[in-house]
Amino acid sequence: MFPWILLVVSCAVILLLVIKMHLMRRSMEEIGGQLKELLSTDTNNIIYLSYGDRHVRCLAAQINTQLRLLRRQRLQYLNGDRELKEAVSNISHDLRTPLTAICGYLELLACEEKSEAVSRYLQQIANRTQVMKRLTEELFRYSIASSVQEIKEEDVVLNRVLEESLLAYYGAFMSKNIVPDIRMCTKPVHRKLDSSALTRVFGNILSNVLKYSERDLTVELEEDGTIVFSNTAKGLTQTEVGKLFDRFYTVENGKNSVGLGLSIAKLLTERMGGTIKAEMEDGRLRMILFFK
Image 1 (cartoon, helix red, strand yellow):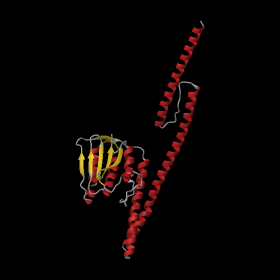
Image 2 (cartoon, rainbow, N blue to C red; image 1 turned 60 degrees about the vertical axis):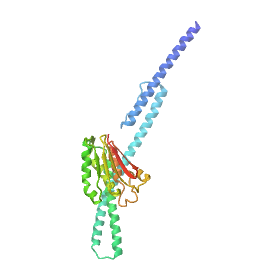
Image 3 (cartoon, rainbow, N blue to C red; image 1 turned 135 degrees about the horizontal axis):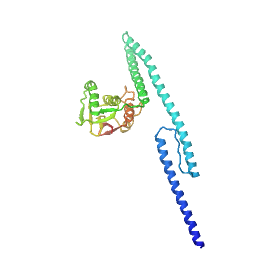
Image 4 (tube, rainbow, N blue to C red; image 1 turned 30 degrees about the vertical axis):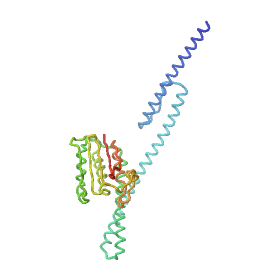
């Protein structure tokens, strides 16, 4: 009789343990699923459990505490980031007036009689002033581009936007003796993108080509949405190529560059859900964009 009682009790205990383990596993799945959703969305919700095990609820409470702390830190970061962008935008805007005045006085001085040394010094000052003006403009544009989170999606034909961008730079290409080799697929490639942002991306890449190309450019558009800009750039190293999208980075021969064009192109490309990268292949620089 006693062995049967012991067997029944053992079976009951095992059954209770199995049920408890099942409920705990379901609670862990609930925590994992809710945590993934909470981290991927901007919400003030917390983790709720349908099972009342004390230890599991303690774990959920600790996770909720860390979630609240993470939200406060994220809010502080967003506020600080917004204030910084506004400050950069305001400073860039405020610098325009004195720079315009300096350029005006330099033009007046150019009309005055002066020695050869003074003319040389004034030319250097004028060159540096123009660089500073371009930097101010790019800072202003970068702050605007990085602060605008909303992308206005519309049906865009990549072939058409790319052709229009190339035509806009036709005169600049001719002045540099660059005849682009254009290889586009005949089938229209439709994507949901912001046309003005896409034009800005193409424009910044083509401007970079004008600065560093050794009188050649190949542009390719494939049916899957891959766009490749390539040009000979034997002076570039792999290290320099890896830094091309860094803010304010310029290669040695880009003395009049401010190093924000490709950074803005990367920012806008990723904002539209695309990818952009640079690589060297047999002495050619390849800028590869992809919009899925």
